[in-house]
Amino acid sequence: MSAIRVGVDVGGTFTKAVALEAHPLALLHHEVVPTSHGAAGGVSEGVAVALRALLEGLGDRRGEVELVAYSTTQAMNALLEGDVARVGVVGIGAEPELRRARKRTRVGDVKLAPGRVLRTEHAFLDATRAAWPAPALDRLLSVWDGALALPVAVAAAAAGHGIALAPALLVYIQALAANVVSAGVRLIPVGQTDGQRVLAALEPIVAATAKRALATALDEVGGAAFRADLASMRHETQHTRLFRS
Image 1 (cartoon, one colour):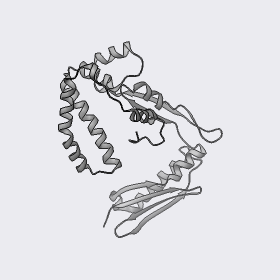
Image 2 (tube, one colour):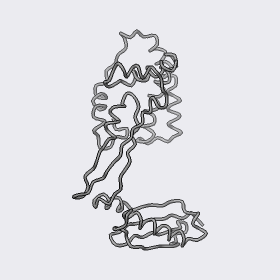
Image 3 (cartoon, helix red, strand yellow):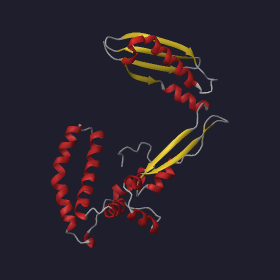
Image 4 (tube, one colour):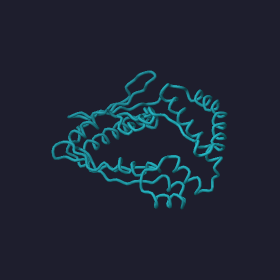
């Protein structure tokens, strides 16, 4: 006897819910109710009615449900017909991308079907100062209202919390390496275990790079990664942004 999986489909006339057992494959129960286009809660009310009836029909086995899958038809039809409720959008950002993140997440009202609009309410959380508040960050923002490079923001936060340069530099490079490895784990793909092996192999390079940076004069620090810079500039306008830059 295996766990139970539930599927829900919202149609133009009826909303259907089925409960299946995967191994061996068996239909345990099903319910069909009218799609609630005219209800105060929209078609979601019909979904709730169908699910309640389905769970009641499962009896003592209702606690074995491990997955409920909804058809994309419900969401698509709701958007096309404007059958939607007010939506809350919570944006979360951190320096140096704080202002840009706040702007991106404030989407305003979205036009749907003729005469129908998706209303949104926006709230924003400053993850930098909320998680690690420091007067140094406040002073930095009081004298500079433009964009901030990530190393500058990290340096201000570290200095504000009394973290010395050497350990701050070490963990900064470590985080950079971990981000690159994380991208490889998802996109190559590399397994989590192999990803940890790669990260462990990079530890001597991370330590050596941090040591060399500490001994290098500021005027001698520099680099050129023109194509990477261009890719980073295009990053925010890409359709699918996950690790693509």
